[in-house]
Image 1 (cartoon, rainbow, N blue to C red):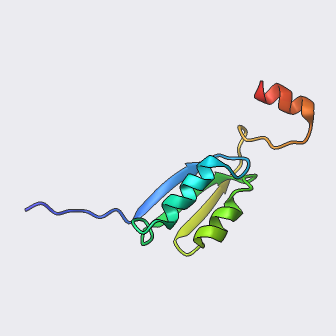
Image 2: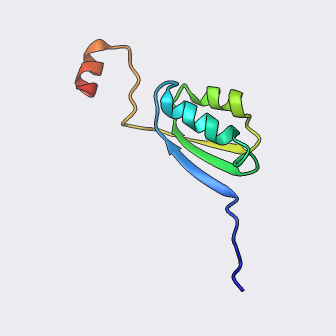
Length: 87
């Protein structure tokens, strides 16, 4: 006989600046009835402003958020740094 194993935790790595398409898809996944009973660990950069939207829409009961410092996600208001970084 084969034993079926159930996945109870899923880890997601998300590096993001603002709220957008990836955040919307993640919220829809986390709030879906198929994944409602699962636990998630979300690894994300500290300057991800979309995390609060995820918590507000899905709650924090089954989501653990782990923050990390990112060199790839630089958030600045300086036009010249944005120009150099993004182009």
